[in-house]
Image 1: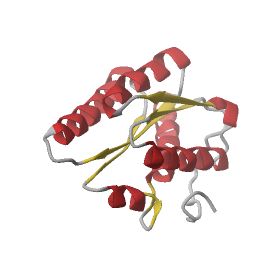
Image 2: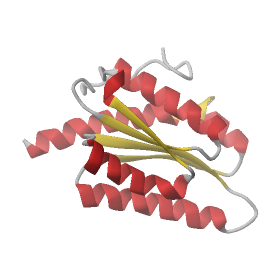
Image 3: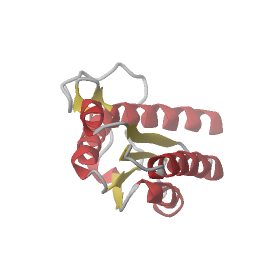
Image 4: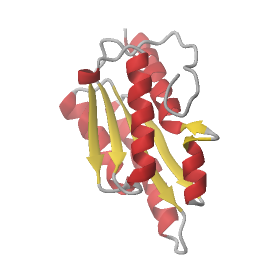
Length: 160
């Protein structure tokens, strides 16, 4: 079992031997830290050594893409999982941040040619975030970690 009480999904991908990154926003930390815990638990269950998982924290979601790119380029991570939580408010700020974050993560992946996974929650309310951070809908940090390991394997196979 892992964070959120859901069993590990069957996968042929292994995280063993890979240096992996996680970028986590400190904004909405109550949610984001649950995502990080689920991701780390999943990566280690899939064979990653804890010392090979680099966790970098940034102020908010807007700063995630740059740090993800730097983890690939400067820390030599085979892939990065981006985690955060953006909750819609009363102003258009949500739309700008969510869109910029998603686009920036995609650009970082395309620029580096490495898997950079979008695990940022974009939700309407705090309760929706809780549902996706170990609540009734599971833990998106877990799903992001599984996607990261799968993409690292797939990219390595194609580059071989």
